[in-house]
Amino acid sequence: MKYTIGEEEVDFLKRLSEAFGPPGFEDEVMSLVKEYATPFADEIRTDNLGSLILMKRGESDFPKVVVAGHADEVGFIVSGVTNEGYVKFIPLGGWWDQVLLAQRVMIRTRKGYVHGVIESKPPHLLKEEEKGKVVKQENMFIDVGATSKDEVEKLGIRIGDPIVPWSPFMRSSAGKTVFGKAFDDRIGVFMAVEALRVLSEHDIQHPNTFMAVITVQEEVGLRGAQTSAYATEPDVAIIAEVDIAGDVPGISPYEAPTKLGKGPSIVTYDASMIPNQRLKNFIMDVAEEAKIPYQLSIVPRGGTDAGRFHLYRTGRPSVVIGVPTRNIHSHVSVLHLDDLENGVRLLAEVVKRLDKEKVKSFSPLT
Ligand SMILES: [Zn+2]
Image: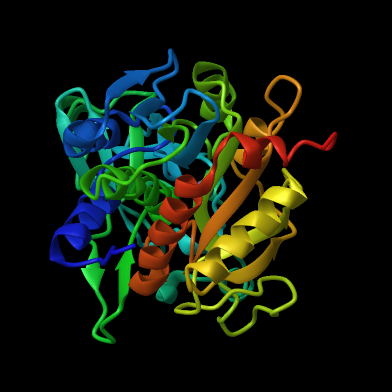
């Protein structure tokens, strides 16, 4: 299977990464995906929460194979404005307070985007006991450059407005790695959509109905996965996600085994799902047959959309394919383009082989 990440693919990744889309506000990501994927899908629809379903008919109605990535990124929401003209906020998704101070953010208002920075006290004014402590997010505020509450209101900022990190995408000087925000989980979106494009552009026969599903609101509790499982009724669900790279000082390989550049990962355990073992083994077999490097992973804390998909109705065989990523849930994450490329190849190779007999063989009764 020929698939390489060149300039055009990197540009799609950049646009996905820079798109504005915290949980519940994914419309910009969805428009981008819809525009990009329209030539490759036989049918495009949404569910009532906003997840996007891109369907490609193959040789059979059964099985229905879903590859899902979530559109939302961790962000914040405006909770008020102080009399001095600072914006108070609460998190949408999981943040570590230490990564927030002095970082730039973007607020989306009814009048457009407003830039801001999460204010921090200069070291000159810090008391000895403050220096060793993490400032709590609830004590932080965003400076939009205003000098009064009135000025902030004139910008259009209201309670409930969404906020995301401001962080331009770029390639690293090292070459094959990239920096950017929201890789969790725009790279899952990227892989699902690119798998669809590969099948379509190369006219690859697949013995099933394929659906790339772009879910909403994963970071606040896998909500889009729950409704899009009903909307797609999958027979098999493969979730494309970031994996937590362990090749970082201070992280033990036994808590995060994957490394950048060594291939996509097959997640053998996370806190939301234990994968169907026959499906997991099948994916490893496909990777070996197609000579695609892969890594086995565990994610002891944290879950994915698979946590909902595998519990749909009477249960559905599900698995997570990850891309090792450093520094997730922060302004700038780092990943290796080879892992992303091999992730897309693996998904396409798997979809190509998922026929009726194979999917039936995942059932515990056979
Ligand atoms: Zn995620």
